[in-house]
Length: 250
Image (cartoon, rainbow, N blue to C red):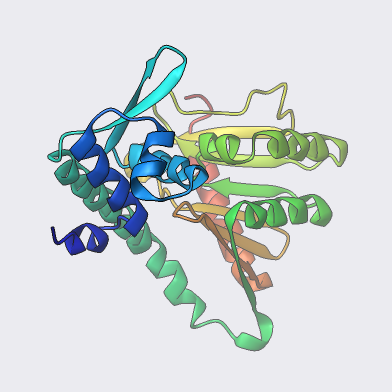
């Protein structure tokens, strides 16, 4: 069987081997799959987790043992559809970010410093820098839920440090039901206001001191930090305009 197309759409060699084996032999333990495929059991577990995330494998318990089985091969089409939807979302996010990225090319280079940070540590870096700078923080396009899911413990420390250093934080977010907000007892120096979705730019932008941070929630999450006094002032003025027209209650 030529399985090249499965590699092309994103499955690894070992994922393909395990998936094909499960289709052939049916319900199996990781130990049985390890023997059938000659893949170390610890690696079998890793690949099974990845296949389950793709929707190509499920598991059931028989007694105390976990058994795995391949889902219907039609699920491969659903996996491709999910990839298309994710790609479309990422394309939309890039399109929203492009005007701001293009604007960077027009900045006087000698007056501007640009740094790019990837992953959780990148988020922590600029959040720690906010505490170090000790200036008011202005935020638009935020999704508090993503920060809470990505850095649950660190965010508690961040709000604690905002309070200790008496740093005010103002956030403009979208006006809709169910939007996640940090509770006042956890974030006592943070104030929220709300815009209708048609008025709202979902790009997560943070302004503090002479710095602007643009956060893109892709894989991995990326934080682009721009240090430029004039640009920061422009963003700050724009924020103040939105703050005036934003509603105080959701």
